[in-house]
Image (tube, rainbow, N blue to C red; front, side, top):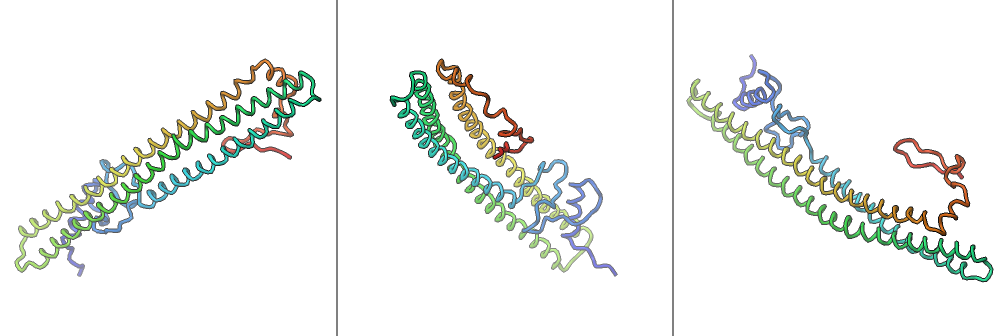
Length: 277
């Protein structure tokens, strides 16, 4: 003989049928406190996607890695600023020697000025990344971690409490001495409401995660836009010097150093340029 079905399994299957629109199916994962969220089915009105704990951990790790990379990049920019200034000073010294002609000395002096400008702007860009990107996002990341931790703890606590209530409801009805069809239907109805309530809790939890993740990465992409704008503005300052009355003839006196296929090959989309020795 087949084993009698418990109130819990009946309530679970009914809840699953409501969400999926089918009359039957495998039991819902409602009662597992450690359910694999990717296996959940919330139906058409549920979350558009499931962001699991592993996804959140990967998100925070990627965020942290980006900020650490920014710190390394900023440090390299500061070093670039120093060595560029040293290069500019060396050219300025050469420009002041007695050997170079007036034109040669003038060009050396112009090149020195250009590299002083470049060195200064490496420093400006590093400062901008520090103040407008890295520091505010470090604070944002800490707030992000705190919210994720507190939200998860609150959810798990509520989930355990509701699951306990459901188990107690089932235990109470299983231990009843008098059983009839009416009392069975009433008990099933109570249990069904508790199951639906728990499923709503889970759906709301994952919807809340989606909303918060989008808010978090909207802040990040806003700061990325600022970093891109700062970088391009710096390079615009450099390229604007191409029309300088001294530098322009200097550029015209030599061929494009990056036009030769021996020195430079056009990269495939998404790959860094390849330089040949």
